[in-house]
Image (cartoon, rainbow, N blue to C red; front, side, top):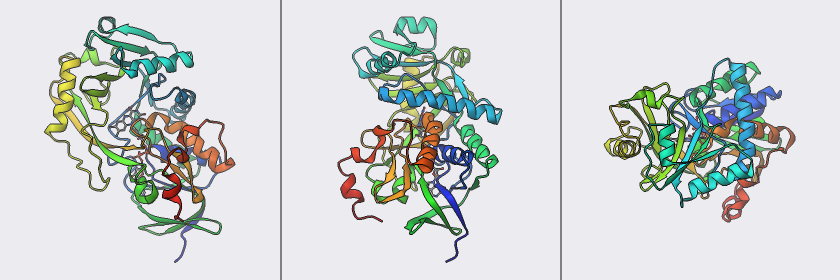
Length: 388
Ligand SMILES: Cc1cc2nc3c(=O)[nH]c(=O)nc-3n(C[C@H](O)[C@H](O)[C@H](O)COP(=O)(O)OP(=O)(O)OC[C@H]3O[C@@H](n4cnc5c(N)ncnc54)[C@H](O)[C@@H]3O)c2cc1C
């Protein structure tokens, strides 16, 4: 068995997180190899479908806000170096029935972190942003720094940045297995063997395939996105339509202004509740998928559910508490696990890249990542006990 080459760090999976990790590591002088099973970028994982919401008001937990502030800085740095706009500010709306957590928790994060915000009734919301037609009992929190990232272009920008800093990235090369060695890690792909001091596993929905112990903690779930042509597209332009997270009686939905595809983009969290194997997911959206999104659009954004412009299937990778997992492999400390991000991770890729580089280079990071430790799950000890 001959080893093709030795690196400081190998990154398995060059999607959202992996591309940011490759760029951050290479810019800090590490010899990096990124291995990606599909193309750069591709539409088989979790980061495709043109764009992703970024917002500071964080109902998921206020402790994400400092990470978000650094994410914004790093996305701005990336787009400056890449000479292409990647981050678009539209403002963000978090809205729900006044008694439902979404607005309450979003407000809490604004108050704790002194974020500028306004609370609007549904009538005030419609006066300001006429496409929104929410029920009378709903409140909306508007936070002016929200917007979206051109996610597929962010991956390209990170890969180009990584190349420029000397990284090697191989697309269409599948990591098949890895094992620790006396002085690092050996990785086997369908094309050869590589060695490195450290391995970053950022395989998204495939995390449980490369680290079987993660299979019960990182569950892929099928999602579908729709782009629908509104009859008044001018109401859905980025300057008149903030991105949103909205809890209504049908569930929790999110949406975007028209950008790149000529349609209003909408999705539903945990779409139809379908846990999937990432190698066997039904990638072709069907009428039931479309119906759920079209019904929501027609009810709360009247006139938005015209002809379909595009439909795409994608995957969340959910942890049991929907917080991230960023930690060392308990039985293999030179292996960093950087996934899953439970449907809200893209906006953090830039800071997670920095965190990976910190951990790989100095063994510590100034960012507070205590929320993402594996040890918070009672099953961790038994799951990882016998491995490697
Ligand atoms: C429909 C949808 C909407 C979302 N909306 C938002 C949003 O608005 N805002 C937000 O912040 N987040 C959002 N998210 C979540 C966010 O997109 C994900 O958290 C993020 O994209 C995950 O990045 P990742 O790098 O973990 O996964 P990916 O980008 O999928 O990267 C994993 C990579 O690993 C590769 N890989 C896997 N196995 C191997 C192997 N054996 N060998 C080589 N390569 C391998 C895969 O091919 C893939 O490229 C959304 C997700 C979905 C699906």
